[in-house]
Length: 185
Image 1 (cartoon, rainbow, N blue to C red):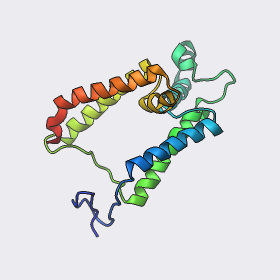
Image 2: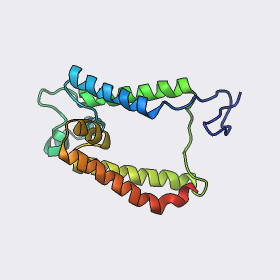
Image 3: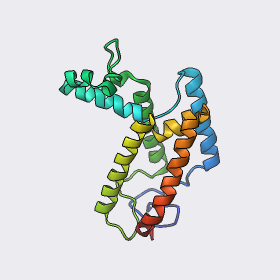
Image 4: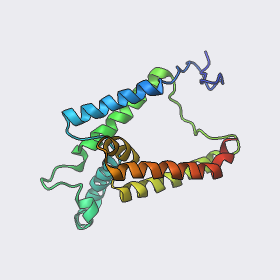
């Protein structure tokens, strides 16, 4: 059996991938997960805090004085001396990763590949993805939260700044898409 994507193209050795979930059903499910996070944990969803906690933990093992002197990173260390890796968002992101891997394995979609258009090399795709990721990381720090935290948690709490942030992200993405469309044609 050959792996087949949703467009009928063969990709590999032995499994057939399943269709993607209905986006409306997935959206309702995500909303219920957000509600459960508020009810059971008292916190919303996000991801950038997990990476900042991990960075604070890593750097505290290399140069603890530097981390304590850095106002941004010191906030992730906690006053009780607990490891930054015990933060709620670290467990959330680990759960998201494990859930995505499990879902991908069940659907036959796990593979190592760089999704790209026909007119762009893998190297260019990886470089542009890295540069875009760096812009997103800086933007998450400036916006005091990542896109998921701003859109899901901030949006659900009707924070005006979160709504404005998400609108500007969509405006920026649509504006930039015009200049990068050649990669996908």
